[in-house]
Length: 348
Image 1 (tube, rainbow, N blue to C red):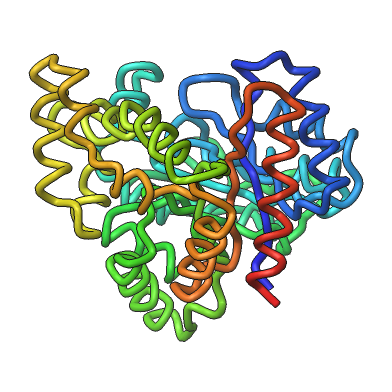
Image 2 (cartoon, rainbow, N blue to C red):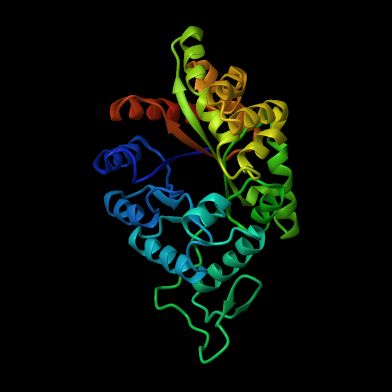
């Protein structure tokens, strides 16, 4: 049975409306709510609030950006939220990108693979209640001098699952090796092997299989009445996909572009990126074909969305992260309810 999830953030819509959305989503049967961070609101603060307003829903950081906090602080935060939610917390970590880490936080983005590996190692030790010693390239605990190894006073809990948000082959391999789940994006089920193969290789290196990982993928979901309305909806999403292909990351490094290129859209991705970086934003959006929007989202007629969910299921996805479209709260919840029912139907 595929689980259902969504992602929210505390910035943007009025917070009270966002809380109403999450509370109602829980009532509708949603399984997981992830809270995003990026360059908006932080993730842990709203998670603490939502822990008090929900009862069954799993709550995850989607994602805490590695490098913006020490590994010990990440573990302290995870243990605190695990206590506040009475065991419902999922720790999602991501390496972010050079623009956010270096442009906003003043932290070097260099060596994200090694930094992620060491962070996960230290986080697990802290959450296990150990006095932490770590002599790595990116993390040294304790620092040389008078300090001694410490353990945190928060109640230890090794049950907190760690999900990694990764896109590149090496980071995917690491995810399969050390994580409990994968938070994916920029997903095309027909090209799933480009992600699942390195995930499986990493899992095998740790004596595991893909079945030991929660494979969580997300996309916007929206329902069209007919093919004419669907064409309009797909056209409206071209600009957003053009931004992912050309505007995310830095001028030389865009992991979203690379992920789409590996999944069968290399020529389109290169053209759109070139137009975007040349300042031709409208031309970049026009260069995104409707077929690509349809392939990378859950936008369609009800029959069409059902078929795409079957493709996700057959690709091995175990949790579907839904971004419901709608002009207001009521419309978004209606879309979410329809999508949850379709996921349940397809999973039977």
